[in-house]
Image (cartoon, rainbow, N blue to C red; front, side, top):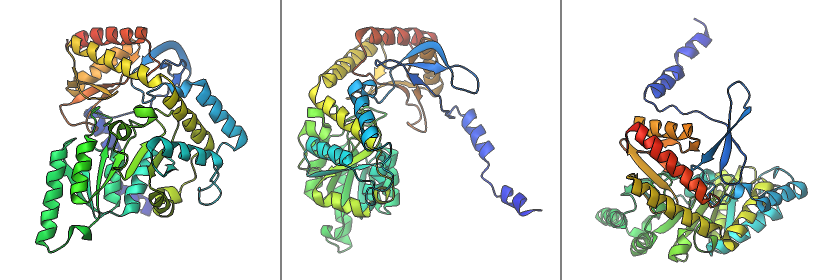
Length: 413
């Protein structure tokens, strides 16, 4: 037997893994699209090896491009200007030769918006979460049970004791903190002997729920813990272009504000905002920052312009008007809608029904993919409906008509 055969025998059974995913209706696939209008339409590719676009257009109610700014001329012009002036890429780590005035301008605006001393950009929101949590080296992390995967992975890589509390439940968090404090007392240790970090999303991407930040901060201060809030799905959408932290006025009670540039800010990347000391620490100890090429200058410039638009236009107001209209319409049809944010999970329950409903919508040229396990718990499969500020009333009516027809065809209405 050759060494190559022996190596194959110790392989990973990828074909079996893929077959199992297929059998369980869990296999996912990439599907290229081409956006062709500012209200969220795209043309889907026809068959064949190349993604040649056919004439049909579909209306998208599934994008995190909440303010519709990826197609905004001002944002695109900012990216083009940065590419022409600074270049298409940073070319190196920010600590080597990849630091530019475009990065500094974005970080200044982020810090101003988040009401912090400084901000630091990362190549992605995932890198920001993992890099920040591991750099802090907390002894104990208290994490909401539905936190994003990047937070979960950051907790694992930090090699900290992870304590999970009930979703959006400040009382559960306080009980977990008290339990840990009692344990330390029994072992003869002072609470100050350990560093405690509470981490939560502010807006949860699959449930649309909003964390009770005031209650979380109350619990943190009672037990001397730090608070880190992931504003990925909130940045740009709340008070003065900030997030839930700004809407609830807890900027001075949250030590670490993290977010992304890839959703409402229509770009790519992530950021962390906080004290000058925090940012200096991350510049030196966050491996996902130190050992990554700096954010591409066009991405940084696009995010800066998008943040300016979010702060000084009526885009946020138009988004929230669309959110209210959609929620009222779905509930009047008899659908169950969860959440308290711009994310509207239309809960179906059964994964096959969710897939069938999504297929029925697509046949009617409305795109809302089904979200199913393992992304969400069994029995809670759903369609994650997300409007954009640039959807008009006709778009929303089209969405309602498609949901009613597809829901009746599947037997959900």
